Image (cartoon, rainbow, N blue to C red; front, top):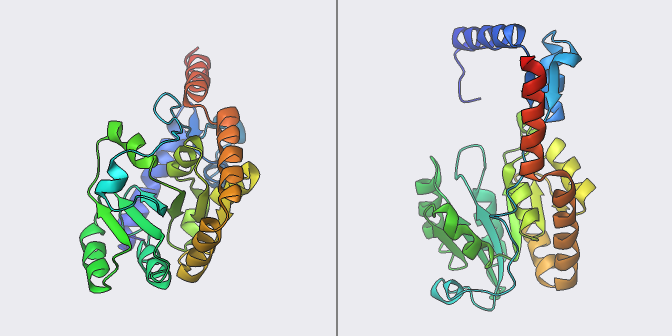
Length: 259
């Protein structure tokens, strides 16, 4: 919805169709994308789905918290984390509204790490709402992220409520599960189907701060459920979403196409 100029949209759609028709083969990263491409008149045999995955050499679950927890004022707390882009598509005010609802629970904190077009507004909104239970940090180096994951009790994966996002799978889902963290997912469609299949989290209505607050509170009072969801999610991504395995599959496909 970022582009509303109809002539521009028509030109881009024409370029899209040209690329589909002239490609030797097409790789889609979700089943929904494959369906979309087929609706453009492309035969199914020309499209292969290879979904995104996770690098298990980087994403390894840790058991101990680092001094960072003390530095950020998170020590001893249940931490609901969001790591990633703070963009217009993510509707992260949902987190701030949930934090406001849970402000009386002093052992629950929210941690947001990342950058994006909407970050400055969100920081200002956090300050206006006087949310002492929300810590917001700039984007961090990738090699430092495992330290931040060690602080996290549950991972939040959110997008706006839009039919467009029913076709996507945020990579944060794979990373969360690889780190053995339960997911609270505010995305409809294929993402929700994946989380349900994995048994790795809880799905809520997109943009629903009340549901988000309720599920964060429930998990904060049920560490056993957090462990069950985290373990189930990690088993699932280990079996189906190892990036090295998916990369080899992509390489084999390239060899076949190039023959």
